[in-house]
Image (tube, rainbow, N blue to C red; front, side, top):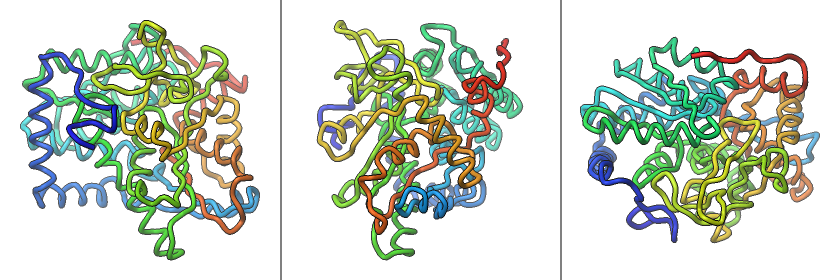
Length: 397
């Protein structure tokens, strides 16, 4: 990466009102990562508050069934139930270091919002979270969790009322109050330096996988699988292995009701190069560059683009990305629940579903790691609705 670019992707495509704030953020970040006390405090919080290292779990029944050694990277065991806390703790420490008294965040599935509200409560900061109105319905439990933690949740009714619209509103809010507000972005998206910052705070996932596989087997895994929306858990998983050409990096994006319909969020499979949310990347858009409506059963993958570093890995062929349908993901959600007694986030189920589809490409003596980005408590009602078990109630602000 050079000057916030990953090949042709990345950069800063932001209004003038945000350029100073982005420069201020980059300066603060560069200073912080050189400060041993900042790193020590971050590592302490990961250990004592988030509960890291997360476990690398040998899924014996899944391994026997799929005829390959399968490990699950258990980010679902972190405090707040997902990988999001890794990044949020780092950014909140930056906010405190910069003297900001208020944080804002966008959220789709609610896990980033919950993590931000949690860390804001820990440090006594004011917190506002922007969430698409459709996602407040799908993830009403997480809405209440954020409010319980002291955050104010703002349902966004623009557009499709999902993650894209929540991100747009959070950026508008940040531009209105850059003096006292720190925007905690939840994925490897947005203008530079956010993709780099989020990646660096999430790389703990891949660093731990690497160390544990070397301890257990004296070698690296043959493949890593992770779900990809904006792409933070996948980038955290992949990044420490980019130079290890023998390790396949495989991302699962949201195929929704099928990529031959307009009801999906498979940006890399069907998208084109464009500029949106302050970055140059690959997006689902029309011929005039207007961002297309997207859909996924997973609120966390319901985004019309991809982080710029993922776009670069895709274009260079270093990582592979394939769409996974709602039905495949729900089947994997049920499969892991019944096979290992682990209910995964529906986002994470996309990664497991992709490995199940690709299992014949791997042999019994190979080892695969699937990152479980979060737990599935938040998704049980939505999956029950999908299966026709019951109807969810609407969320009203």
